[in-house]
Length: 281
DNA sequence: GGAAGATGACAAG
DNA sequence: TTGTCCTCTTCCC
Image (tube, rainbow, N blue to C red; front, side, top):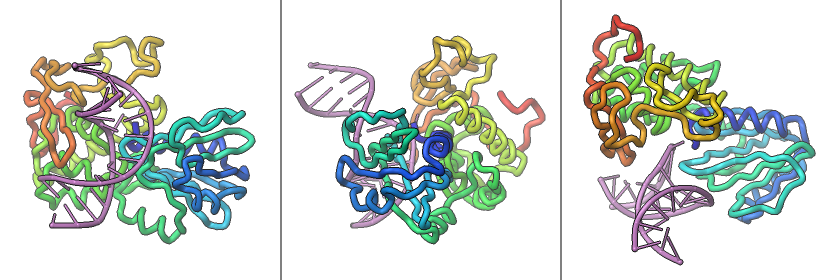
């Protein structure tokens, strides 16, 4: 679940459910008892996300920092609260809602200074209005690393994960091995703008859909049949299946410990030149 | 019932 | 590059 859109969506949900309220904080699992005690019975003021990081600001300048990692969840339900199921690291309770945090990589209470240090290491987040894509470009343009590697680097663009990486490369027909150095500014701008649009859609729908209507193989993405299902994608986890555009078998290879998926036929651009054709495919 | 994976990130060597 | 941590789901026997 958790790429940047999930965290952005979560920030909104927690804001709607808790901001302005005094909340009860507890760690049913026991592994965050001390931190929960620091937040318990204080008011939550605002919640924001930056990349895959979530920050909930409380009065007295305490900040709850959460990173969901690969499989963490932070689920909000309506009261009355049921007994915690499974390993609940943190439970927040207000008059309006109950939120259970499970399996996070990070769950900590931090100071504004610590938050600032953390954020200073993160690249622009396509979901933030204050994002400056120039900062990402500055790293890409002088890097010999491949685009596939650069796109997973949170200091280049924050919030992208393994799904968005594979899909954005496909949508722009870019070879995953293309070195950052060779990519021209126009191509970078196209990637960034597309990510802004795609990820905002992800925030709205709660899932990652990257397939253009002309290539869709399933019922319309807002139909009851697709409700709640994983979004439709071009290559992610489609190893061996035919490319939705050309029919070539989708390939996979481990790049820096993560599975990369791509179509060797569609994705041949080096990024050297801006395309004169329509942006997608 | 158990192993393997999973949309992540870090430290150690 | 490998190992480690966190939890849940899926798949195979």
